[in-house]
Image (cartoon, rainbow, N blue to C red; front, side):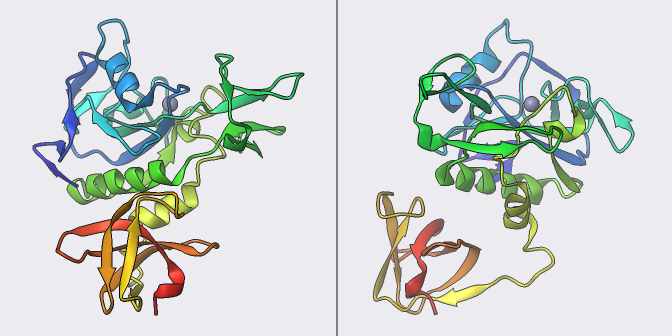
Length: 268
Ligand SMILES: [Zn+2]
């Protein structure tokens, strides 16, 4: 994924009418959650609709789908009242990414987990954590690996195209108290290292030792195979999870570089 003429390529783009003027030399990347289950398309459709009065540059869905509604050289309306390092109105100098996620969840008296709109959700999607700006724990929707992988790919493309960006923050950093996104379930530390760690530390590479190692879309056998890495292929390890799966980047048999998950016992 790369950025050409301030748009993600390859990518889906539709113009939102809700935007400001030119965004020159952005210095900040702001992460948000959508408080929705609409998917990237549903959220993008909302941002494109005449009544939304809000937008972000990009929306990333749970299935890893990516939708762009404002070019990166134009101000989007995602931050609202905000300040970072003493500088107000973050929309004037920030690129905003919306991640489709319900955010805060609730457990009803009968034990069900529900969204803020009362939709019944799989309890496995809920994690109890305390927000850094709060004192009591509550339930939050977890961010899945497919979505995180897409988010990392988008963010790497943005950081490569806009080297003036020096910091990645949450909406809850620039509008504390007023906003709680992307919240405690968002693995900010891991995310920042995945998208930016390559600049300082030398890349960690390993060699594929299986004759044909499946490259999957997520950390598990249930995820689709994107292709295979052949024995001897050098792959860059982006994230070696505590479990048996590692996220790597490398060239598939037959060509084409991918970011994918592999069983790490076949890496040496
Ligand atoms: Zn937000």
